[in-house]
Length: 234
Image (cartoon, rainbow, N blue to C red; front, top):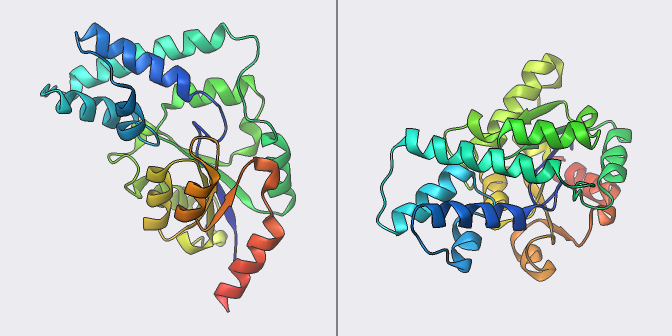
């Protein structure tokens, strides 16, 4: 049966992909490299900054150390937080809080799994007063392998079970909300079912990849999804 709902962050909670793309391009320019628009979509969406930058630089025949990558990531993160601080209103997706309330009222556990840094997640959730909804979080610096590797989602299950021993959560009892192919693949490899939200890719694309597809968070039909979970558990 359905016991927990796990949310991705960038592209599901906050509409900030254009900010990330701009900052990645700034880093490439500082490295005397010309940004290519398609590379961000191909190598960065749904993946951690470390994986994104490493793969872009490798494609340009730049092999860099982990320490150097860490410095680039820290530089980008500071610029990201500076941009957000200057915004009068954070670009949180419409309907998010209503969706979180709906999940909470169902008695389902709520978690977050993202490649974003903890400092970025904390800043956004605290400023938007949404942090109270999330019992556990897995962020980019806590995992060795970025999505589409399932490591982050499997770690989320472990954390729920450490938080509540009686829960005995299994990956098959989790629903994931994702916006990218890498995220959907990670969840499915963790043996979780996925709702693909058409925030970043078209609805028909999400429909092909995920178990369910929605245009907006307000469209999430938890009753129908719970019925499907219960039917599959018989």
